[in-house]
Amino acid sequence: MNRISKVLVVLTGLLGLWQAEALPQNRERSEIPIKDTWKLEDLYASDEAWNRAKNKLAAQFDEVLKYKGKLASSPDELLACLDFSSRLSKEFGRLHGYAAMKADEDTRNSKYLAMRQETEQLATDYSSKASFIEPEIAEMDKEKIDRLIAKKSGLKIYRMFLHDIQRMKAHTLSEKEEKILAETGLLANGPSSIYAILSNAELPYPEVELSDGAAVKLDKAGYARYRAVPNRRDREAVFKAFWDVFNNFRRTFGVQLYANVKKDMFYARTRGYKNSLESSLDRDNIPTEVYSALIDNVNNNLDSFHRYLNLKKKMLDVETLKYSDVYAPVVKGIELKYTFEEAGKLVIDAAKPMGKSYVRIVENALANRWVDVYPTPAKRAGAYSNGSAYDVHPYILLNYNGQYDDVSTLAHEMGHAMHSYYSNKKQPYPTADYSIFVAEVASTFYEALLIDKMLKEIKDDDVRLSLLMNYLDGIKGTVFRQTQFAEFELRIHEKAERGEPLTGDVLSQLYGEILKKYYGHDKGVCRIDDLYTVEWAYVPHFYYNFYVYQYSTSFTASTALSEKVLSKEEGAVEKYIEFISSGGSDYPIDLLRKAGVDMTTAEPFNKTMAVMNRTMDEIEAILQKKTR
Image (tube, rainbow, N blue to C red; front, side, top):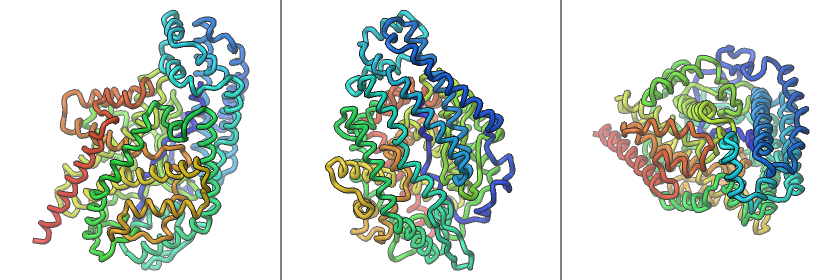
């Protein structure tokens, strides 16, 4: 089953925004309290135990061959094959999760990088041996599939998988061709793997001296932290130093990204799709119109985004808003700081509208070391949740620096973890794995619970202004920024599919045009220096094959769902829990429709814009009151 390769995709987040505060940035991992590190022993007691499990798994691969040519012969043979493949896939998810998370603790550590590579090799080896499964199923018709299911009740848990193969049979190749494609998995991760090592472990990140005399290292975590310092000259120095490094390596990053785009094109063309976008979205049966409608909706609502930027300009009291200002705190004297223990309490309290059972799971996650909390040298940047260990529990990686943004990031990743937890508990393994399209719904839904709790309890105007702007920053980062990324990703694939070159300079020019359009550069809304057009080289999600648009669509869906829950609409909580318990038991568009949101319409996006403008109305009212 192809799920053995799907578990290679880790749910990541772009929402971990670090701001300056007192926590040391470069504590060694040995200095971090054990309670603030994840307990990977829940997966395997030791590296040796992992290695034994890996060898045991690999020794079973050839057993799948005994089912070759027999899947259509009887329901018993079909069920036995699918059960065998499913069991191996489940164990593989656990193996890969352990190796990947150990590697992410310190990206310089070659031992764990090698272990992760071993699991990726295993995935390719098994996929190659099992490459006959989908072609044999595709050769049957739907009526025969349904007859086999009717004869063998155990096949019911594979109904979605079997029917989906029938849906995509026009893009399923012969056994020999599928075997060749499976072997290309040895090459497919090359661009993203090189990018990860270069950008996390080997890029010569600079140091700058701030106005207070502090010398700070601007790696990814340092940049995310110090780009938000209150002093404007410091921010400009941070931006220039950081983006100079990426600009110096733009040719290398350009070659890497172009190689990744060509990989997407290869798979799309080989399977007979019109283009890379159609190939990517068809995996989850998402109409391409959903993607194009998102870009159109955002471009048609840039006035709302520019309203937000003008508010930021007014609150910063600057004559010209610069790109280096967009992460700056807008309320002077307000620095919301939280220890991780305080953050945990806030996230637990925010979950209370979901009921006691939901809250108990969050408490368990925080108490039992599901979370790796603090930044350390060469730790993977950003934040993510990994729910690939079906029989254990999800894990969360953070780079916590003590600001409200970090609390929000904890809520975001906890939302992912809850999605994985409920789906893994309520669904059989074959339908537990949910699509990326719905993944970000659960994460941004939890963020909405958190901001609602904060705004209900805090009455001070300055603190409310800070939180309201933080919420708008979230809309900026999730709806507008991710759609900006999605438009760029679409355009670079379209250029490559037309046979046009994608050098680092070409990518910077195209990214700059889109960036300046979104931020109203030519309208005088926000000035974008040409140096910053290399920002495309910083974004790992461009290696994930049309991933980023789902942040935006998911945010609009979660806004609609959270409005229902927080307004105490009858049955809303139950529908939401059912949604995050559904895994991949249906197509994502249908799962969301059952939860009460129709993503084929503009309604979720329009509701998000209404909430955004309502928030800006409140900010303007507070600002007007303060000037009286």
